[in-house]
Length: 366
Image (cartoon, rainbow, N blue to C red; front, side, top):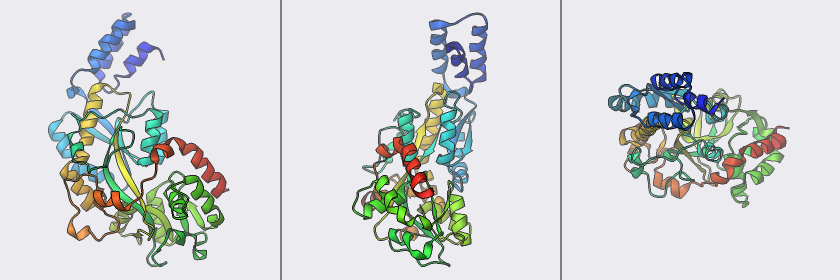
């Protein structure tokens, strides 16, 4: 693809502007003059952006977004449609990488590991505080490592289990019980269970050490998954009995009638953070509206929806967990999360994902 056709391609979200660029190409325009003209077009108003596409986790989250964020955005920007691309980070992010020369997703929600993987891969822009004023509501000390994007929700990572088939686990080491041979669900794309194994063994928050500690107990792993819904289904049906899992996801599964429960073992759990990110490679109008949309995720109304209907913990200090939910182990305030949950060095872990996943596959799947 030539530099000139690359310029035309960048205007895919704006049919009129792209047509104008292609018309200039057809009559022989090019070089620096075309680039300056294209930059001027890109800096024009966002008013003619027809749509933005946002990556959303699956499950109940898309419905929560449609309920809590679509109406306020549509009120201010009625000409721009928000489209949701629904996929887990493990599935959606690799697809985004393959499409980076022709990107479709202009922003979305990413967990700690993929947030740092994206930072390493140069996928994110630095957010403009003027377009994301709700960042001022973030709890003190809560931020996205590396300065790209911002947190919008939290949840503890602990253990999900089937309460009808097995007793509540008290320790992370309970996953290694002889009674659970072939009955534990694991991931190879997420590393929290390995981190906790290393942490409670006094070896720091090391994925590598945790994998080594899991090796003598790999017979307990009865299923490998890349979807929280699949994990929940397996445990609910009793085909599996336990799984390292997310608190909010477990509570969402319970709300749909699945036979699962969530606990934080005595050693604690990992703080999982959802980060909002805007992607590189888009005209300024798309980038602006993407940031304005993502900022709604930190609004008071949306934060309360995350808590009461999604069972997520708030990232904002402007809202409080309702009294009736304070005893739920899956929900904590931002301040409690900062005190009670461990936070691994995801800045280091993110870029190491291919190597770490390869180690898990060789050591535990073989």
